[in-house]
Length: 475
Image (tube, rainbow, N blue to C red; front, top):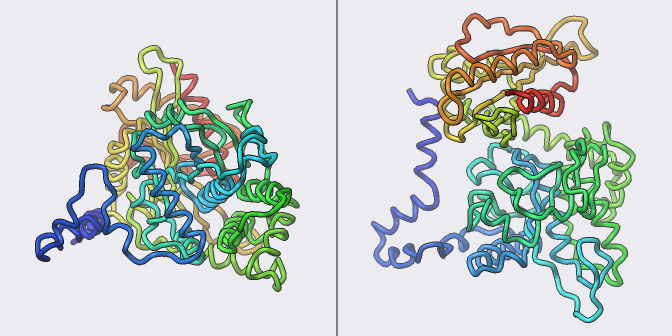
């Protein structure tokens, strides 16, 4: 019997590299085409089926130029626009939008990232969007796949630059870049701490990072893409002559805003006003705004829920956000904390394992966190429980918090237990979570704990700061 994890390994056998390697054996002459000098982009990579339209061509061309110029030592000429490592539609779209804007904005405008120089002719800025998600994890978000297909991007995400395609390690590249722009994220991951933060656009809590960044905008919109799109439109419309804004970019932005704002039903006035400005530039300009946004929201939500075929490992990594957290411990000043958001109950996920036991789930979780060297992991599960006389639709939102602290990478057994107890005590006593032990808590083993709570907005935005504070204060 094949588990989902075994199917993952089988799928990996049919990668582009594997297929081309096979052809090199059976097809005379293919070997000379397949074999390349080290670090060169294989020629078979680009002739595959391509996306059409200006946006796809620009993205692919920019990616090739970036990779080539980094290898030539020209990193100081580039700005990298990056979202959070979860790689959701909002984060991806915001990064693509702002990088497109920067690359088309001339230096003789009033753009805030650089001072205009009348002695130099206008020319575009070198900017690229980076998805801080491995390429093989992009399709774990089917809504992203649908949105990119709708705007005619190349299949297989070949137009996009992912974290595992960087020509240099992130820590090394960070020190060489002209700078980075953060979207949908308040501070850079630890691997990018060596880079200058030029701008920040976010709809989360301001953590005080990069106070000199310009623009530096923290605003409570439903979608971060709203903020980026508004600033883009403001600067675009101030230009003496607008650069070409393809309808594909506009429609990708509307997809992201629609999904995050529930078709504008939960949108702020800024989400609605910016969406109206964007609609006028789209192929849907003759339609009514709310009808368009409701349709897009339904399409994206339907795709987003199509996760039935994912195994536990893929559910954990599809929306994983983690980084180094500094502690007060002299012996362990840094630990790696990660959080996964999963739209299924733990009981449901357990049924997807080979033996359908609680510890089967934790074994898969342990393999994943060992692979990425996470010391602390939390799986934040959410689902709806059907009950009578509960809410208008008869469903109650239930949330779970699964905590594991692992020894072997940074922590020894005693320290891991101490850290686990500190986090567990924080969750047990937090008035903001009001958590209760899971119904199968007696099946848990050392440094494992699962809670259930019903806080409506009790996802990662609530849990992460609470856990980070507990880890920072651990000695």
